[in-house]
Amino acid sequence: MTIMREEIDQIPAAVERLLKAVPEQIVPAAVAFRAFDPKVVVTIARGSSDHAAYFLKYAIELQLGLPVASLGPSIASIYGAPMHLGSAAALSVSQSGASADIVAMAQGARKGGALTAALLNTVPSPLAQASEFAIDIAAGAEYAVAATKSYVNSIVAGLALIAHWSDDAALKAALEKLPEHLDASLAVDWSPMIETIAHSQSLYMLGRGPTMAIAAEAALKCKETCELHAEAYSSAEMLHGPVSLVDRNFPVIAFAARDAAEVSVIETVASLTSKNPHCYVSSDKAGDAVRLPFVATGHPLTDALALIVPFYGFVEALSVRRGYDPDKPAALKKVTVTR
Image 1 (spheres, rainbow, N blue to C red):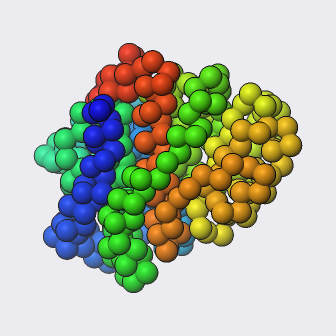
Image 2 (image 1 turned 180 degrees about the horizontal axis):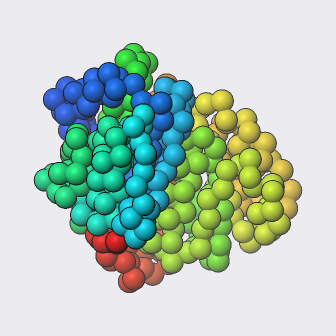
């Protein structure tokens, strides 16, 4: 068994561990964010952590009605430009808390007047020191280069912050049940896609709303672990150009949650199946596309998040099938330090 597979299997326990620490770790930050009453939220992250921040962008906009923007870390680390963020909350996401550009941007946001919090798998760290609230995502040591449980726990920590910030009973309840739903997701089998995609040169990942962030993470994992070109698109953008590349040798994986965007995702996939038999979608309304099984969690945000677990299992097996070691991608390191 690969280390990556072992760490995927640890996701439910890691989430349960994090949720037990919510009263001490996350509630104080949520109380402060509610009192601060920001008019905008900015995020600071790179790589898988940026995809976690992308998911939280949609969650904040949907739950709190606040606009969310991603800050380019180079604004602080390379250009040294000051940011005026007196009415903003800033949320940084990082596994290591050590990348100089992320730290510099968090420092710049705080200096610019933002209320700052960091979701981290390494506390203490420079990013923890730079932030007013340092939230330990409690994923535990992660040895495989490709992030899995730290990605999930970053999102869960952010969702817990949002749930207590907005005092949303439905989201709180969904988070309480999430470990068991993620445990069930470990048994969801997406391996029927392996033989087709193992011989492909490129593929698309589709999503919309929170599942767009899942699609982005999925595309990155294909590149990281399989040396397979994959691009993520919103199902709304797919028909504005990218569709021209799709033929029967160009698979499409669509991530659909039980939310208001599900029909939109399915409609886009349905427009592709006549010329491409290798369209896959996580919905009971798949039509002529291949249905991917899923775990329904009872909440649209956790529904979307749960989809990454069967995908992680799939991509780890795909990497091995293509002859790679998913624990040690040739060109990557576990901690990428940029400035």
